Length: 610
Image 1: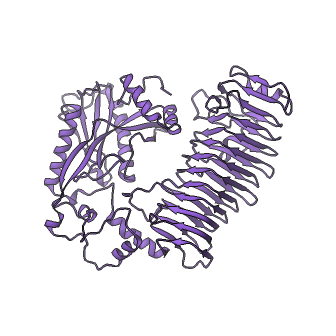
Image 2 (image 1 turned 30 degrees about the horizontal axis):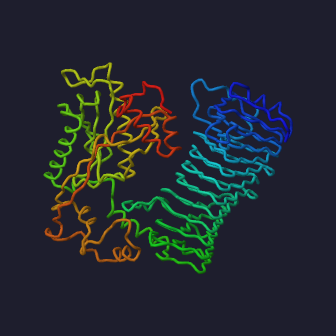
Image 3 (image 1 turned 30 degrees about the vertical axis):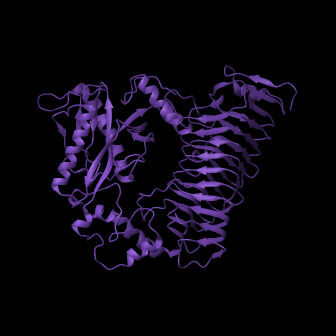
């Protein structure tokens, strides 16, 4: 490296600075955001580092396009964040030779191509719509050391066409596709001493003859897969932990592959000195061509089934393993899950399973609580011709003179009469609300006034999408952020309690068969997530007599359940990204919204906080 570093500032043309820098030169970036109107192309060996050494202090950004291309040399980047946010209306032109270098499917915030061999130390990369890092080509190679990928619209790091990568001491999380994804023969990614967490698809994805080797890693499947192996892909996991975010009340869907440690389809997996924890299935072999080798693997009691396999597959080699929950053939496993699924519906409920009096009483309790926190209910209700539980729209209830200075739309369709679903991590049941400072007015005939109708419809649409998602997916969490598609746009929301939850005393006498079945009793075993495989098999093999048939005396039991209104608050994308990337940021966002007297309303006529 040259003796005299080149100091660059955000006001300079960074692309020109790099192009003019000598080979083996050093470029030091002053703190700030470097916004590019064309990709930063590096074709030589240089050192580029932030002046402070912190990636949060220096960001190189380009709208919805590749930020950095490395096509030759062995450059090193230290303490820099590379970010490709979603495109804005005034995004710079993207027609140049480097943006057309790849097919759209292989674009990323940082791309290493041709003869590039790039090293990133204590860097951060994210792309709202594409991958964070990618390598393509026989000589292309990426090394990540102490790096972070906090969020990406697709993968964390991707390699194909005989490219390679080494990831060590790094964190990749919250990706839509694989945290680590490798494709094609000769392509290999090695991951060491790293955490791969909460991909919507899988932490590790190896396909089309690609190879992933993971050593001493924490692989958190989140609510999906730890590893997915398909089309002759290979995964080797050593000295690692594979776990999930499975909750005790999770309803297992036999048609999905959620909460599986490793799913093998026409490929091979090798696990050595590993621990699998809190999974529905440790390893699922979904094809007669799947190959598995396991040595010294411990499946703990939290795993529902250690191994599920295709009876036609002889390619299983197991030694010195603790298969705590045993093995099952695929057909047997599918029947078992279907049986349990029918008995453990968590989010959805059928009004016909409750008496008219139970439904009426629950409705009254909700109304009492709503009026306590929001004031008198508006005397008109937006009724749906098709019930919500049958796929129709919501019935809407309106509160127009609230202490928050705005109007609120609320549901009363979500929480079941026994107040046990849907739930968050903090309350047993909740209804959903959305608020606006726009006044709520109807004319004498009960029709919306035209000047407000667009706003009402917009709120109703957002509330409906979120309610349907909750109904289908079972639950949400306080401060959880969600992205909702609306008229080809992406909207972002965060959830919070509108007020302190109410503690209700519920008499379980004459409750639905589902509720009675879920109750803990000697005559009706628990169907919570802690159910062992032996218990489940015993349930499945029982006679056709209904296990919910207990006496009235056995089912009469007063319990206390917490109930709340969860309000969805629309926020900016930058705020959603910040909350996803920084621990404790949700509480900070809520505090600032309250200081500005904007909480808990969904009006975006304010500047972003982050």
